[in-house]
Every structure is written in C-alpha cells, then in structure tokens.
Amino acid sequence: MTLAELAEKAGIPPRQIRFLIAEGILPPASKTGRAADAYGEEHLAKARRYTTLHGLGMKPAAVKVLMAFDDALPIHQARGVELRVDPSVDPASIDVEATLADIEKALRAYTAKE
Image (cartoon, rainbow, N blue to C red; front, top):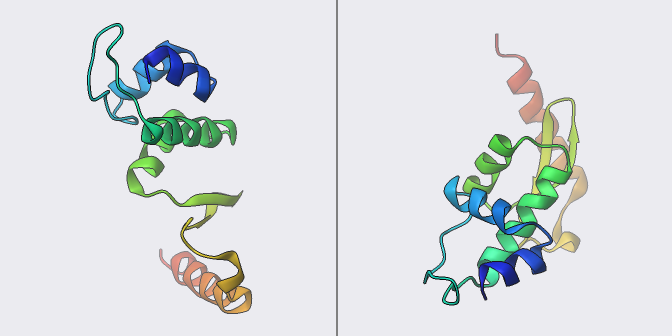
C-alpha cells in the first residue's frame, strides 16, 4: 500500500507516518517513490499500536521504547507500574492467583531496593 493508503487505514496523517519512520518506530517502506511505496500489514499494525499507546497518555519516547521491546499489550497502568500481556498467551491459560503472587513478590523485591 502507498503512504496515503497506510495513513488512511491507520487514521493518522502521512506526516505522522514519516515521523514514525524517521524515529525508527516504523520500518521504512520496502520501495520508495510517489506511486511505488510498499507498506504492508506490519506497518499498519505498528502504526495502530503506536496510536493506541499514545492514546493511553504515553509520551512518544516511552512508546518507542515499548515498541522496540516487544509486542506485549498493556492492560493496566497505575502509579508508574504497567501490566503487560504477551498477545500469544491464551487468556484462559493464565493462573490469575499465581500470577498475582508473582507480581507481588517482584514488586516487593523491587521496592525493597534502596
């Protein structure tokens, strides 16, 4: 798809797409030129993820770090702590009580540091 098509599908201006590419948040097109831009579904997914994270109130620099880290989905943010879930994990397979115990243990260990 062209830059204009990507921008339309992602719901953001072409200028924003160019900014995301310049910042390394989106990969560049596989071909370039007015009619030859080649953006794919990966570009669209990353652009949508960026706008979702930015819409949660994250600064662009923080979004860039998260997007470079992995594709985990943020499901909760509070008091500077973020809970993220790997999208490949089946929600039905999560042992909530065991996971909460692990999170509590990790937070207690972290906050015990001086």
